[in-house]
Image (cartoon, rainbow, N blue to C red; front, side):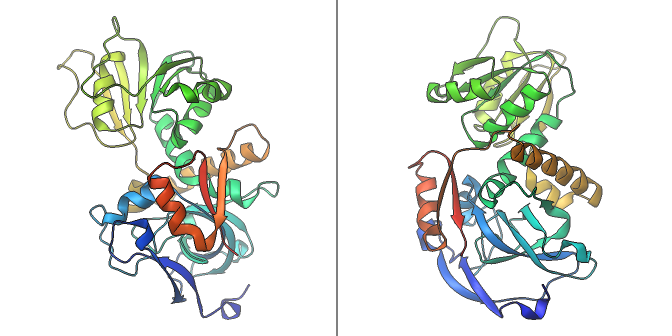
Length: 331
């Protein structure tokens, strides 16, 4: 589709400077010219994530009122900027975009072409839009670990979206997976590949100190304090991977367990990643999207609403009023 055939403006939810999702406003925005290296995606489905409401207070971002939030979406490329191959036009894609750029809460989103992931024909837009943030985060986390099949690992906070994919990726790599979550998740996690399930998260202030350590690696998606309190469960030369927050202090004595600390953030690639890093990430994303299409990887359960209901659905996500992945259909 040629750029001149597109509408001059489109609907988008914009941030008004408040921390309340219901204070987002649906407006019509003029379509800006594409920058070099960008593609314009006509969104079919938008994926909502916890980060989408967490940033609305403004402390984590330098937004001005009028910014379009949202990081995940799926749709069709309808225009390309300078330096982007014409073969992208008409391509069905999913993407994770930067918090610092115009986001996915819109009918159209300009996206860095290097962040686009092509969709298999058999995969629908709703599954595709549910995928980028949690699945790519899970992939980055598991990539922190040396491949040592059979070694025991613990996934803390495994009941959430990232844990849903982490259990599958870790199991596929041959790790012996134990999960920590509320018992209501155990049946699903065992189906996804967990060999053992234990209750959690830990109570505030509680440290888990099993005899002589138990795990080659701990991947935690609760918070930095929880991750630090899981450190005693690691064996010598183990790995502590933090997804939600960074452990502020080294969690063991010098030359004790001799741990390696890791942090995971998709935003790091947007700020500091080069083309090679993006090519590696999107190639992994496309492999996983193919596995979703072939049903070798299981998506989350999904809850979809209409575009006009986006702010209300984000408010419900903030208060955890439903289970499953919240999605917004764009018509």
